[in-house]
Amino acid sequence: MKYKDYYDTLGVPRTASLDDIKKAYRKLAHNYHPDVSKAPDAEARFKEAAEAYATLKDTAKRAAYDELGHPQAGAEFKPPPQWQQDFAPGGMSFDDLDLADLLAAMGRGPGAGPQHAMPIKGRDFETTVTIPLQDARHGSTVNLTLADGAGERTLQVTIAPGACQDQKLRLCGQGGKGRNGGPDGDIYLQIKLAPHAVFRPDHHDLYFDLILSPWEAALGAEVEVPTLDDPVLLTIPPGTRSGRKLRLRGRGLAAQHSDLYAMVHIDVPTTLSARERELFHELAKVSRFQPRTATPKENPHDTSTH
Image (tube, rainbow, N blue to C red; front, side, top):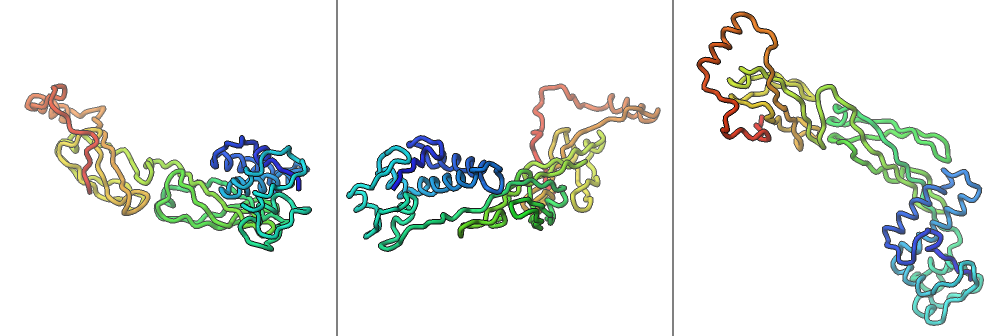
């Protein structure tokens, strides 16, 4: 039996954590997957990495492997008697046996026999899809075109209502085909939200700017505001300050579990008629409002619910 240095194959130290081992394997699998790499030894390198990972990711197999010591890679060796007693299936012959077969047979009982073709999981795909806010709120169906060793294929993927920016969907078994009985790969779909002319998403909530006149803010009003569905009437409480958030429940991306916020901004007319100027002068004379005094200000993060 020839010794294989699985740590060297993955490029990690013998003290590597399971997370480091996983990262190293994923990198090698991505670089040398036969559906991706054009290198002449890609398939062999991929199988070597998969074999090393299959042992080192398993706590029991890794412990048994470490107990073999550290012979030189490629050197002929035979497990010591104590190792055979502690780890090897009863009655196993070590003649012409591969190290991977030995470790794969651990714990399967007498006569389990070697496995000559390692199962290889199919390739995982990562892709991004951009959808409008309306589709994020109401749900949608998108077509994905993927290219693998079998050529191009198109998948129809349903995105459920309530999607948000950078959300990831895992499509199990929809990736590349497995080999030697290995499972099919997965597709990891990252969702991006297309920019909108009015609304700004924040996770599942939405924000937009609401411009009010001074008299609407001071006296209160009912104004029509947009949503991703139909426009609605929003009640402006009297004395609303600039920067206040007014909440519309259930109008975000996740329906009943998210909200739409109107961010209040107060604007003033740039030109005045003679009558308007007269009224503003009269207001200036009679008003007791002092905007620059040290009176406590309304919390701009306070929200009103509608």
